[in-house]
Length: 165
Image (cartoon, rainbow, N blue to C red; front, side, top):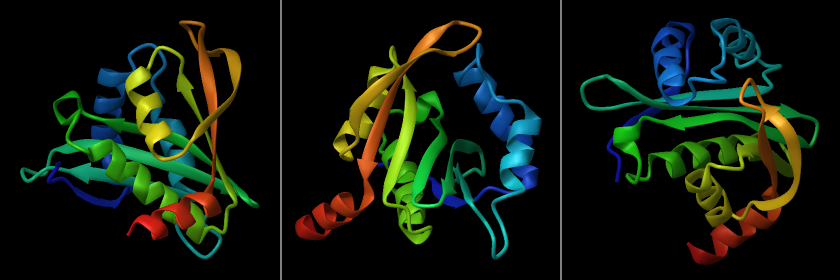
């Protein structure tokens, strides 16, 4: 299990997030501007975003995740864990944080896109109850890689976890 501490992402996290972003997603990494834009909607009474980072005991940023909400629908915008954190449960902790906030945003469903060649992430999402609902052809550019679109009914997920607690 990852001993990383999760906390809200702030503007000063953008530089280390970008380092990890470029390491993990070299072909289709987000820009600084994309993160700035997302964080602009993450605070205050009208917030529609949740962005979180994970830091290890030495203060090194080892993961991050983001969620956007609009009405009763949320979308996992990004989720990433440093390679040395794979298999530690960090991805599950990041996703759990996002799903709790989807509930706080009063969303009924959560959608996400995942690369068709990222089976590790697909298995994580399936463990949480996400189901495939379609594809977006050529979604990830410039590599022209398809995305698998997955959906989770938040209320069913919450009821399922309450029954197993």
